[in-house]
Length: 410
Image (tube, rainbow, N blue to C red; front, side):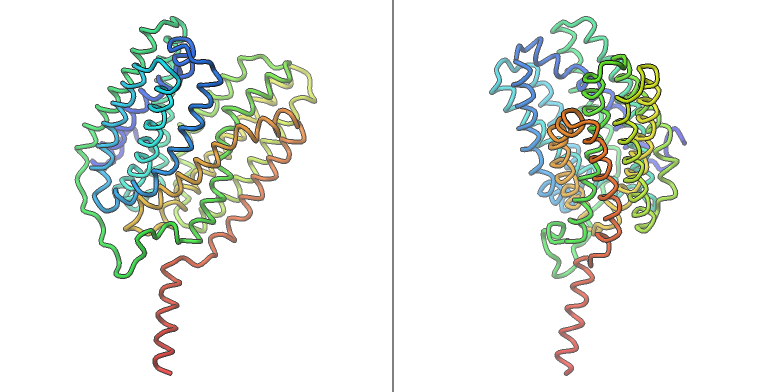
């Protein structure tokens, strides 16, 4: 994998992403401890506030994505990046739950909007291999977050308000710096809208909605290593707690090292569908391994856990390769921001449900719940070939015009 892409615009976006994700890694590492230990909010209030804010954030993707399509994704993304920096500064000034909730809602609205605008930028500057470039940015993101996480770990060690505020301030600065860098990306005029096109085309695209729903179900896999596995390890008690960190390290290393390589061959819708089907079965296999940890001795549990994490990570890489291709190729070129916003909204909604589902299936109902979750992943993957066969709006419009022409001729 090249350190930087050859294309200037892609290089600029990669550098901006790297700078920003270092700051994000710092914030993600200290976020909960800052709000509980420094601000003094109960952990339950922090969790409730983040959940409410996350749900509010889902509504912004489609309209802001549409704005990016019509006003230019670079301009919208830069404004949102600056706004994110200001929101981070506001987090350092909260003292009550309601202040925290208000800022968190704004932060999630801006973050969701920025993902939609950024998706439109990738679509415009990704070239012929948009999915590969998206995979490259994902690898860059993992490296940046990992580096930021190391720095954030220092904040946890010192455990002082000064450290927490300083790290959050660095994240705010990273948004501002990355926005300035993004200004070096060339401005591209919005693509013309085809005559008679539906303004909210993405919401009327049944094929994309069906595929996005399946992608949303499968995207719940992100919470397996972050939420389900740690809780399962804690419940069993015969695997050392350090294995939680090892699971995340394995995931980060594999994604950073293999995402681009394993995405290169997924360059058509048909290949993306096959990748999605394969990833569903891989997730199912990993779920079986996770569920079997309680049946083996402690030393074998550690080995089985690390193998399960590696298998799950491979499934994640394959699944994301399919998502990148489907997300862009099933979308109308002139409405990429709107489509990416819709996909983000659906996957975000599904992921917000994941912790509650996993706390039941992968902890309370384990090990059977693990096997059930694996079956759901496999079924969702196998359903993707059916979803992509649904006729898109463009084809339906052509058929309607042809039918009208036949009627007039008759």
